[in-house]
Length: 122
Image (cartoon, rainbow, N blue to C red):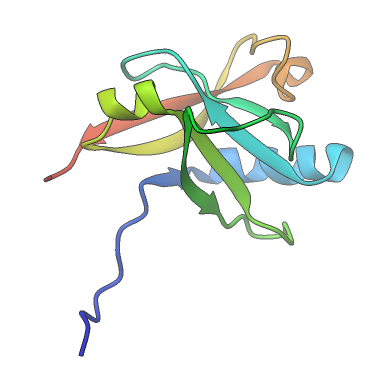
């Protein structure tokens, strides 16, 4: 028999991030995240309509986020080079006031997504 424990997800959402994703989903349809540069807390993941950002061999799918009120999961991708830096961290997507990137869907909302991280055992 195999192990019967539930693996802790590599990426989680705060309640505020989930609420914003529900609003963005209503406007833009299915969503995805991509995290490229940045080496610490405060890095901003980019939110796109699902499939708008092309992923490939240089990207890693960290997880499929379940959001209450959103039918399909929100994929969270990270560049492989970034993943190597954050290999032993657990990430939480949060929302803070401020200007997001012009390409990320939350930019017009006056808030931006933000990564909070903490180290986990290897």
